[in-house]
Length: 79
Image 1 (cartoon, one colour):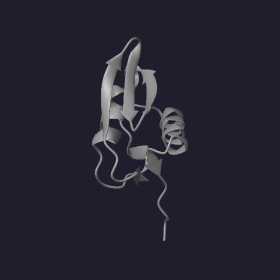
Image 2 (cartoon, one colour):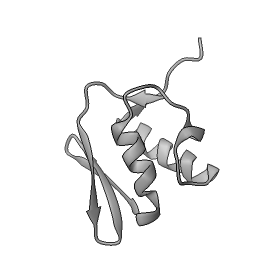
Image 3 (cartoon, one colour):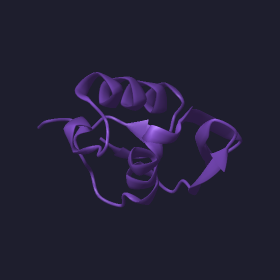
Image 4 (cartoon, helix red, strand yellow):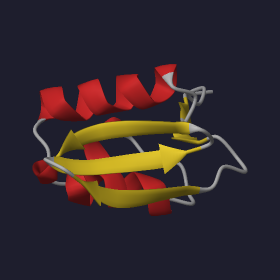
């Protein structure tokens, strides 16, 4: 997967955690997701869900799913 290009984003501290802000949306998560959010926000190259740092496998999947549905990430073909 990769970020939808070109899409500006930033990670901000919010009450109770962090928020990944992009377009007119924000995806909020607990403070334990900060490294993951920073990685995704700064990512310029395609990456796999398992590359997202600081989270367990289920949390990686849930975060990726949320960001795909929100239009921040897009899936790439394996071909």
